[in-house]
Structure formats: structure tokens, C-alpha cells
Amino acid sequence: MTSERTEDLEPKIAGLPLFSQPVPPTSNHVGVAWHSGTVAQLRAVSNPIGRAVDWPLAAALRAHASEQLSQAVAADRGRLDKAAQEELGRSIVLDLIESTVADRVNAGSTALPAAEQDALARAVFDSLFRLGRLQPLVDDDRVENIIITGHDNVLLELIDGSLVDGPPVADSDEELIDFLVFLGSRSEVNARGFSEAQPRLHLRLDGGSRLAAAAWVTPRPSVVIRRHRLMEVTLDDLVARQMLTPVAASFLRAAVRARKSIVVSGSQGAGKTTMVRAMCAEIDPFEAIGTFETEYELHLHELRDRHRIVHPWEARPGSGERGADGRAAGEFTLDEALVDSFRFNLSRQIVGEVRGKEIWAMIKAMESGTGSISTTHASDAVAAIRKLVTCAMEAGPHVTHSLAASKLASTIDVIVHLDLRTVNEGGRSTRRRRVAEIIALDPGERETGYATTHVFAPDLDGTATPAVLPDEYRALATYGFDIGGFLAQQEVRP
Image (cartoon, rainbow, N blue to C red; front, side):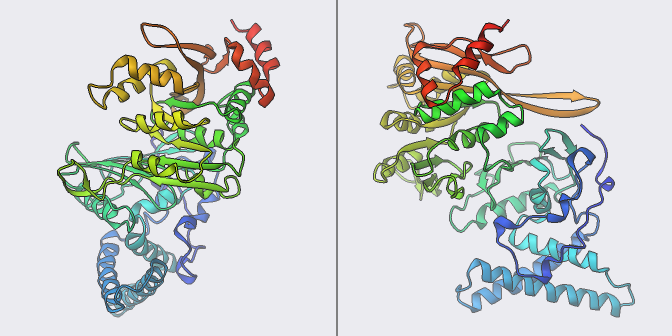
């Protein structure tokens, strides 16, 4: 990991007068000025307003702005929508900045430079409506993941896989926790609690990022924000990034078009969601798709040029005490969403991430139709099957190992496993992602309840290369599978 600190980066925000123009939509709130340098030249990523902002002053101004905004909204009896509140908030912040500058001058101090005024205004506005000190990091197109273990221990994973130090995101762990509580409660649609009684938080942020946080059960607050940089991605794009070979891409492309049911496995951060998006790009634009996720990650419904008919469902954890049926008030499960979806004339049902009981939603989706896609965490492709069997058995003692194995073997056709490795090159840590295995799954062996065939197996470098092609998969050639390339590479496999 690089050791250079944030002072080494010279951001250029003075040319971005955010507060001299209308507030942009949240999804388009991007720090354009950060595009001036290449990732190769980047030694450390800094909050673009980190050095220029007096954070205690920003916190005081935020408190004043919040009070004025709350009074204005109450006076308007709640009729102001989000955009109008942001416009009003911008005006309030501008007034407060002008008053602060005037007070400094009257007190005999030097006036704040224009760049510092702009930075302070951004900080106050982001604290009110967005992610506060996290916002510049989320806006930076070079940052893929933000890893926080304490307010002043921040690590950033960049889009090239390198890991660098980041700036503090709060002045104390307590301040960071307070902000996470506020962030979880702020959602108008799917608010989520975060407290000693509920020490974990999983949240979809504006713009599509996903936040996971834990406190009270960890020594210091832990936060991971995952940014989905590759939204409109294709299998060819992943080939260009050396994540898989052209022959493996042709197999997956054909498998999707042939409506095979596919599970993508891998460790955390291996690129499973990106792979699913890339495979979904092979689905006809007018196929009706339903997505079922605990938090929105796929965002297929936002790719309207690529997917014209998408019905996205998101689970809701509910809140408050549980009733006699064991459910929290307002809880909405993926099972319920799946039942509702049968009225929507769907062509494909895609269950996002399977970590536990979501497995039965995945099985139902695969039993009810063809061409379903899901993801799960596992160390290799065969381990993914064992993991899914365990998840299915968690439903209760009535689900035996043989029942779970037979259900999975009869519904899953293909498992794609992604490998994530962290390598150190020249004192710099880099993460490398690639497709390592593709296996075909069938009912079979009595002991396990299933049989597996490695269609692609890892070579010495960990890249999936042709191994054994089951006869029934030769038909994928009619859907674009490069069977000639497969057989040619199969012959030279060591």
C-alpha cells in the first residue's frame, strides 16, 4: 500500500462554483475537477476540500442551516419536495457564508479566499443533503471502494485495483457513528435503524453506491462503501480488462442467450455484481426482467437503453418490535416480492445476492422459469454448491441435505467462479480479478446429490481455460459459443 499522505495531491475545485448554479440531481453530483490526473500518476487520494475546510466551522454552520431549513419546511407544512428543499438549503448556506465572511472582516481578520468559501459551502451543503465528508470520495471517479475502520483509518481502493490511504472522514468515532445513524434514518422510502440494539446497517446510497456498517460490536466503527463504477458493462469490456478470455466470454454469452440458470460465486469484492450486469447485457432489451435484492445493486432498471422492461424489488427490514408472527412492522421479504412478481409477465427473474434464506427465492425463480441469474460468496465453484446447500438447510429441519442438493442440482445449470487476489508489485498493493472456473451442474452422485463438470478450469495463472465440454453444451454453438476456439485451446491445455 502506498504511504504518501493526502498533501501530495493537488485538487482543483476553484473552477467548480457549485453554488453559482442550480443544484444538480443527486445521481449526477460528480466532482468533475478530479478528472485532471490519471490513476497512474495518483499517489494518494484526498478529500478535494479537506485542506481548505475548517470542519468545526462547517459543523456550526450546518447546525444553523439545518435549523433554518427545518423552520422553513415546517412553515410550508411539508409541501417542499426534495429538489425545492435543496434549492432553499443552497440559499441558506450562501447567506450563512456571506455573514461569516462579513463577521471575519469586521473583526479585523482577513477575508476567506474565494476557493475556501466555495469549499466551505460545499462542505455544509454536503453535510445537509448528501454524505458530508464522505461525499468527495464517493464523487471521485478514481475511487471504487472506501474502507473505514475508525474515523481516521481510511483506505481507498482505486479502479486500477491499487490501495491508497484516504483522509479522515470525521473528527471522532462518535461523530462518525452519529452521522451513520442520521444517514440510515434519512431515507424517505426505506429508512433503516442503526443503534446498539441494531448494530449493523446496510444501505443503498443515492447514485447507486452500497454502504455496510457495524458499530458497538466492533472495536471501532467499521464502514465499507462500494461504488459500482462499471454500470453499462459487457462481457467484451471484461475481456478487455483481462478478467476472462474471449472463449470463456463466448460461452457465458451463449449460456445467457440459451436461458441457462447461472450462479456467480466469489469472495467479497471479486466483481460478482459486475459480472451479472455484463451477462445481463446479452438479454434482449425487450425481455421483461424482475430483480430481487436486499439492497439495490444491479440497477438494471436505470439502464433504460439496454433494458426496456425491468421491475426491481428491494426487501425492507421493517422496524420496531416484532409481532406474534415474528415479523417487524413494515417488513417486506424477497419471498413476498417473488410471489407478487408472478403477476408481472416476467421473462426472467434475477435474485441478487444469496447469503442465507434468499436461497429459496432463487430456487423458486429458477424452478418457475429459465435464464435466472444469482450470486453468492464462496471460495471456489464446488464450494458454492456446498454453501447454497447449507443456506437452504437453514430454513428448518424439514429441509434435509438430500432435498437441498437435489433442488439445486435440478435448477442450476452453470456456476461461474471469480477469483480475487491481492498482489504486491514494487511496494504497491493491487487487486486482480478474473474468472477462474466455470462448471456445469447436474443431478448425479448419490453421496452428494449432484455431479459437476469443469467446463473451464484455472490454469497456473488462475485464469479459466477450456477443460471438459459436456455433450449437451455443444448446442451452445448455435447461440454464439466459439466451440472451435474452445477445442483448440483444450488441446494445448497442460
